[in-house]
Length: 466
Ligand SMILES: Cc1cc2nc3c(=O)[nH]c(=O)nc-3n(C[C@H](O)[C@H](O)[C@H](O)COP(=O)(O)OP(=O)(O)OC[C@H]3O[C@@H](n4cnc5c(N)ncnc54)[C@H](O)[C@@H]3O)c2cc1C
View (cartoon, helix red, strand yellow):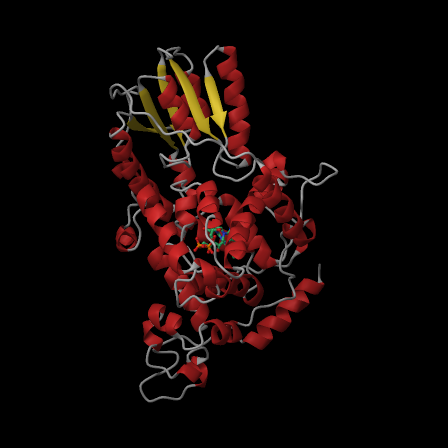
């Protein structure tokens, strides 16, 4: 046993199971302290996630306490400032798991060098991914830019790995504190009370993630290939915020799915979505410029329009297109939006309104509980046509047809846009065609802010310019 204190730097890994950094700390030390570094600035535009983070900290703190491990939250302006101070001490060893974002990996390098220089023992472990970023490359050593060959390679690579023997976190001898200035997790909660609604929908804990996975496997996995397309039903796992915060490891998802003997393509389709997540993480690490600008440089000249009235109508779910408005209201109310609808509202913003995808990305970041830098920028650039392996720009989703195809009876629209709930099915995705006594367009629900055909023609014209 190492006589020093074992520190576990908690980042995106709010779980006991398959948490290699925590396991190692608990096995090497009698006394372990977990700590979370809260950078206020990082969360400034992630209002919804402040709620998830605060709740996750609270739930995990309780869980760790049962293992005699305390969890301390420290507010800091920068990781560097914090560690420069910490490294003045010598009475600890430190462990953490990777987060696959360029800034995190760069900081891991910086910190490792400084820990080595001070002869402080440390160990970094694989994070929440199936493969390490550099394990999946083309034969010539360059990164994949197209999903299908990426996943073919990544899936095989993971499948052929020797499974790691799982070790449990050990109960520590006694619980101690290490840092002087820790804060309460409640301090992280958003100022506005809008998160109260989330509390009725989500429980940000490891148990909840595990239960959700089991329910999904039992009732939805087999039919996932179809079920995932319809926003009026729960056909997907809704695990995204849990995956983002590491309440569940993707290897656990893989293992639990792999065990299932079910017919059809549901299972492989579902695992391929986990694959898209891996692909997006690979992309942002090999092409970090895409975190701030277009992956495809030719889009730097795209003639985006600035229109604050349109942008505001989109954010509020008042565009006059029911499926778009339903999605935007689902997002605001529940902190989550169905993938099909993310594509529809995204396409509407960049193609019908010609507003830069970065505006949409920013809004999603603020409202999504599952916001992840990799999935959000890649998702937006996929929709806008400027990403790797993206939907071509000229493929413009028709919000009326999308609604009629994927929300045929308008159940989804009726749930989120209650002012339309009495419209007959045939008008639910085009309320401007209804002439009903009790429904007045412009009063009960807005006129469409743009006409689909005009917007489509304008978007195609704009595309010609690049
Ligand atoms: C414009 C846009 C923005 C998006 N922003 C995010 C984001 O910030 N965070 C996020 O996790 N996902 C994002 N996605 C991807 C996708 O919409 C969500 O992962 C999915 O809707 C989450 O629901 P689920 O857990 O029920 O997914 P399931 O269908 O059950 O899939 C299981 C898991 O696979 C991963 N996954 C599923 N679909 C995708 C996808 N298309 N790309 C990458 N990974 C995927 C997620 O981790 C998901 O939890 C975005 C998609 C678009 C089009």
